[in-house]
Length: 338
Ligand code: ADP
Image 1 (spheres, rainbow, N blue to C red):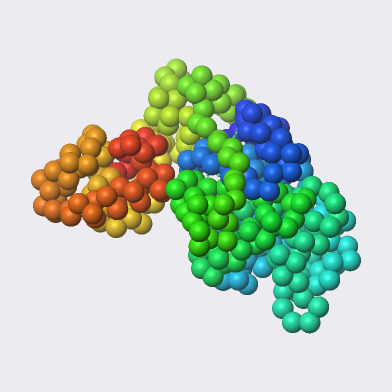
Image 2: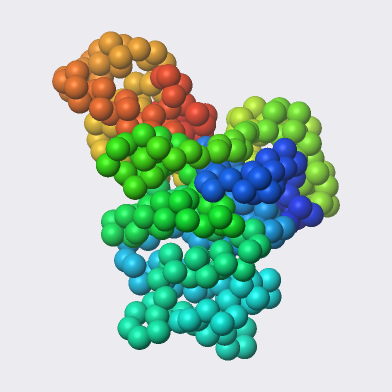
């Protein structure tokens, strides 16, 4: 069902996205070592990725919030268990890995243990293409982030049959994480093939909502679909939230829009007060550095030093909240005006 809020995992429930899936398949068939799957929050990257992983041999690890090595290890072992049916033949005979029934145990430490790089290298030896996917990898933190970077570098250089797919909403942060252009990075000088997940056009958004409502046996009053198409700008995660809420009778159109804005506001709440002031200025229409500065000064009585303002703008761009003094997602613009 289209309005199911969980990430989609197969083409039956995935709307559109043939182009993205095709690009991923082509990249993997060509044996590219590193693919970056990029797009704003809620545009549907995880859904594309998981659907893709249903069609190839691979492993999906969500890197959000990973800090401790043990947590990374648990997630990898869980991911192996989850796809055991397909992966069994890759794991047979690998030192440190035991398969009992439907679960996989990995000894990561001590005698007869295996490291993540070691495990991937065993998988590589099977001679079949294998995809190791890391979702929101830029949101992992040291020491796990360093470990992942070195596994990526090791794999890039040594594992012929493994393609790494890294996913990022925060495009700049992902670029910083991979640091392909930083001589001190283990990935320096490597190349990432980019696949972009784009927002839906107005026509596709409309078709998405109409099909979603039809699936639920609900005929929305005229105007409701148009209202959502206009407000959510083709970002499918918002369309799902809206459609689901409407079908469940969770509120009026206005209330459902507000609920989305609240979610975005919650995320913006994690930014510093100054960063939020700058966002407010951009949300109110400031289109240049000096306009932002004047706005923040007049409205909040804060004189931002030039260097600070540049740093803030750069960070907000790296987080993919704004680009060129425009919000990438209008729901965040509304949230910033609160
Ligand atoms: P992202 O990884 O970009 O944040 P997700 O894949 O988690 O996005 O999707 C956000 C929401 O939108 C989820 O509720 C998911 O079910 C829905 N969704 C995403 N892409 C599609 C699609 N192509 N068809 C139907 N629903 C989708």
